[in-house]
Length: 358
Image 1 (cartoon, rainbow, N blue to C red):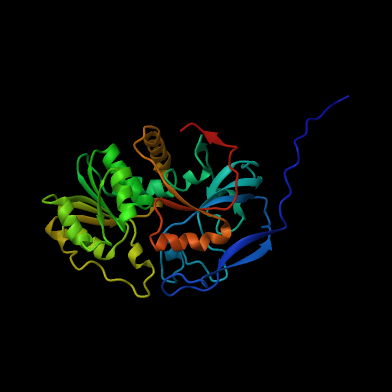
Image 2: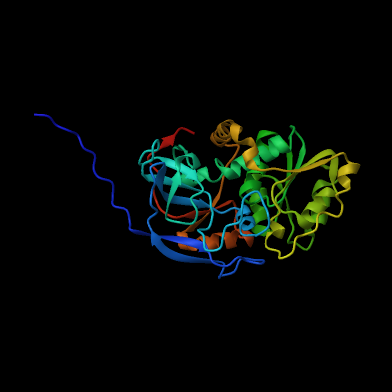
């Protein structure tokens, strides 16, 4: 007599799922009518695809750019289409190489499940003791943006003076910690409001300038920097904050253009800095970048970031919004500046099957 060992059948999948889509392209700030929800059939899976259950979704400033009809590095999200978003999820129906239970990251979008080609998904191993959402933050797009923006584009040197805008946000807070704790730099963070500035001073241990205060960003930088000049300015904001930084750049300064969130919700294109001529006067450079430029170096960067977390040099904070239906609220929090750290949407529980040592 022969015996076969059988595995328990996987839990049944729902016939319909929730997804949120772009209902109305916004002219300026996001509105209640921008997104809408609907029930749709569970995505059909082709032989080259894997079916993924969404666990966490990332909220990033670039998502506002994707809603604009203007030409950009990615085509705009079409009206009526599922909202684009990067996420981490769990494979529930395997593909040619991915297995049930694998944790993957990819452009899952605002839906409870997604069927994607395997070459659009990447298997990830979450460090023990950390939530899967960390792969969207300090060990994901956020941390990699800080790492390559500061070290490659900014060409940071030990002991330099670094100023960071949106410093209490997801990317800015990682930039502050790498500059201060890893490279021994003097760091000044720009943020809005007393709570965020206290976070910068008390938790991250860097000097803070409150652009919402009566003093303002220009006078605040003058007070904090004194006679010092800025070697690296990591810009997440643009606008008047960028102009204030350009007034105080050092010879050979590097301005890292990561984002311009102050203008993303404006109806009209915002003018560039009036004092850009300072780049000539001080022999400075100002460069934007896309993360995909450094894709071949991601593994090295993640190894460095993991080591710095283990050594206590880099920490992270998450602003978690529960429920896919509340994803628009997550974006609203981001663009209203209510978050400290990374905004993530918790869609479902899971993701304990594949873990690694930090």
